[in-house]
Length: 75
Image 1: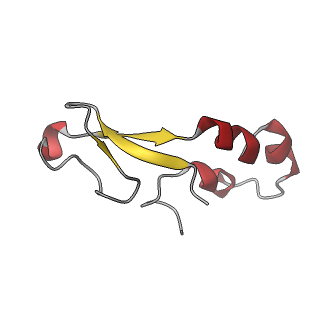
Image 2: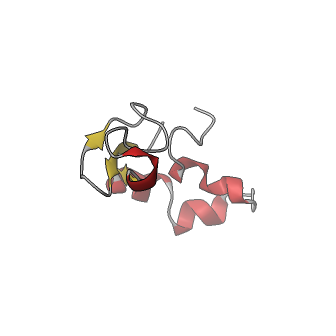
Image 3: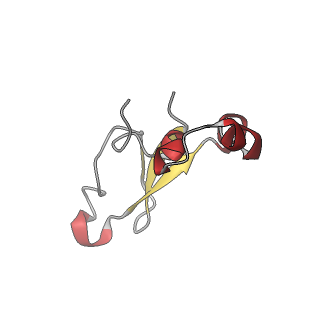
């Protein structure tokens, strides 16, 4: 389950679905079309919080996998 609800261009503000585009906003181009990842923060709080982090025996960076954008995760 991805906790990402979408992507928003920091230049023009256009929003895309989580897997609609990769890496940058096509109209704004590679130089200006940086995408912010939008999260469902209520779902994040349920899936990843101090209690769940403490219970996770994996102490590597992969414990944060639920927070990664969809093109970065194994989904």
